[in-house]
Length: 70
Image (tube, rainbow, N blue to C red):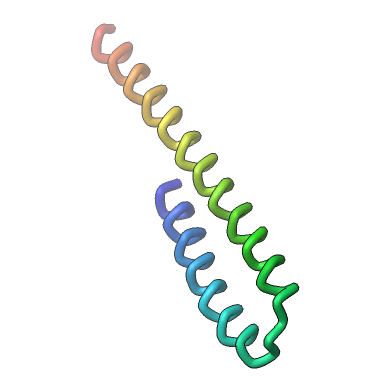
Protein backbone atom coordinates (compact mmCIF):
# COMPACT_ATOMS: atom_id res chain seq x y z
CA UNK A 1 0.00 0.00 0.00
CA UNK A 2 2.86 2.36 0.79
CA UNK A 3 4.42 1.66 -2.59
CA UNK A 4 1.14 2.50 -4.29
CA UNK A 5 0.97 5.88 -2.56
CA UNK A 6 4.59 6.58 -3.40
CA UNK A 7 4.06 5.67 -7.05
CA UNK A 8 0.93 7.82 -7.20
CA UNK A 9 2.85 10.75 -5.78
CA UNK A 10 5.76 10.28 -8.22
CA UNK A 11 3.34 9.94 -11.11
CA UNK A 12 1.66 13.21 -10.13
CA UNK A 13 5.01 14.98 -10.03
CA UNK A 14 6.08 13.56 -13.39
CA UNK A 15 2.73 14.38 -14.91
CA UNK A 16 3.00 17.94 -13.61
CA UNK A 17 6.43 18.35 -15.16
CA UNK A 18 5.28 17.05 -18.56
CA UNK A 19 2.16 19.24 -18.50
CA UNK A 20 4.19 22.34 -17.67
CA UNK A 21 6.52 21.78 -20.60
CA UNK A 22 3.66 21.14 -23.06
CA UNK A 23 1.60 23.99 -21.59
CA UNK A 24 4.51 26.37 -22.03
CA UNK A 25 4.66 25.53 -25.72
CA UNK A 26 0.94 26.03 -26.29
CA UNK A 27 0.55 28.88 -23.82
CA UNK A 28 -2.92 27.71 -22.77
CA UNK A 29 -4.11 29.17 -19.47
CA UNK A 30 -7.31 27.05 -19.49
CA UNK A 31 -5.18 23.91 -19.35
CA UNK A 32 -3.36 25.32 -16.35
CA UNK A 33 -6.65 25.60 -14.51
CA UNK A 34 -7.59 22.00 -15.39
CA UNK A 35 -4.09 20.90 -14.42
CA UNK A 36 -4.38 22.63 -11.04
CA UNK A 37 -7.75 21.03 -10.37
CA UNK A 38 -6.43 17.59 -11.31
CA UNK A 39 -3.39 18.03 -9.12
CA UNK A 40 -5.62 19.11 -6.24
CA UNK A 41 -7.74 15.99 -6.73
CA UNK A 42 -4.59 13.85 -6.72
CA UNK A 43 -3.46 15.47 -3.47
CA UNK A 44 -6.86 14.76 -1.91
CA UNK A 45 -6.68 11.13 -3.05
CA UNK A 46 -3.17 10.84 -1.64
CA UNK A 47 -4.35 12.18 1.71
CA UNK A 48 -7.26 9.74 1.69
CA UNK A 49 -4.92 6.85 0.95
CA UNK A 50 -2.62 7.93 3.77
CA UNK A 51 -5.57 7.97 6.17
CA UNK A 52 -6.60 4.49 5.04
CA UNK A 53 -3.05 3.24 5.51
CA UNK A 54 -2.90 4.67 9.02
CA UNK A 55 -6.22 3.00 9.93
CA UNK A 56 -4.99 -0.30 8.50
CA UNK A 57 -1.76 -0.08 10.49
CA UNK A 58 -3.67 0.64 13.70
CA UNK A 59 -6.01 -2.24 13.03
CA UNK A 60 -3.08 -4.54 12.33
CA UNK A 61 -1.39 -3.51 15.58
CA UNK A 62 -4.58 -4.24 17.53
CA UNK A 63 -4.88 -7.66 15.93
CA UNK A 64 -1.25 -8.43 16.68
CA UNK A 65 -1.79 -7.47 20.31
CA UNK A 66 -4.86 -9.71 20.49
CA UNK A 67 -2.90 -12.63 19.07
CA UNK A 68 -0.06 -12.08 21.56
CA UNK A 69 -2.53 -12.09 24.47
CA UNK A 70 -3.96 -15.44 23.34
